[in-house]
Length: 80
Image (cartoon, rainbow, N blue to C red; front, side):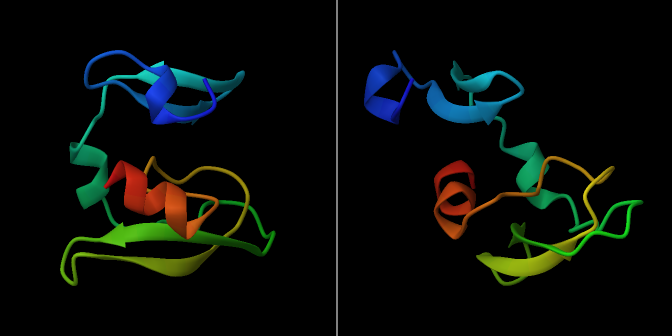
């Protein structure tokens, strides 16, 4: 898929290990905390802050972490 319009029903076009695929939305991960991960890289990422109800920037180390980790602010808003 290239956008949500390519997906059927309530599924959304989401990043996956093999590109973008249509997936059922999962809302629970939006309430996980931001996790910088176990490695020492400095990637600019975004997470949904459940307290402020906004997507916010954080620095991701490159490995580990959780699903509340988005490459763009737009991906964060779309998912959460």
